[in-house]
Image (cartoon, rainbow, N blue to C red; front, side, top):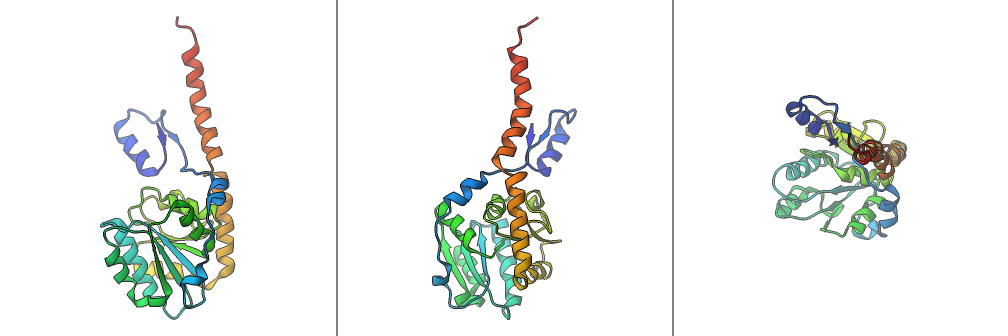
Length: 236
């Protein structure tokens, strides 16, 4: 049983007689492929003001995704005195509702709608900060894609976000999914370019080690090969 996140491990503990068969496997992606696949995006053509570019990536569907958008909007509404722009990547049945949440920002916000993967990665490579609270995220692979693009993360310590975002290493995690706490995280990252660069590099190094496809392949090989060898042995 390969286990990608703590909630899965807790579930397996509730149904298995023992945990000897459970192997932790960190969520993974091909870091080099992410950077190679990213298209070229020119963000400056979409905004009327200068400032750090924040990108948010998420489907616009009812439930947890919409709650993450609402928390981001509420948090940014208290930072209108700061220079920043926001690219919102995603689409879905709640798009009109999400657009209304960010009406206060006007020319600062650009809605891209749904994009091909290469263009999503292009926005990640061009941005200064990924802001996605992560309410209800099973894992949040966009956090790893951001790390592969040397992009720091602003999220909340909720659900399974900490499985892929290390506070102070690849991003900053608000201790709770509240506007005051999340606004503090956003404020720190918007104000400090050196911090953004340090966290972006830290995330890149972590993604290229713990979360790269090569690391996952080595874990799978180490666990599976002995089983294959055992199955080849003659019976009796």
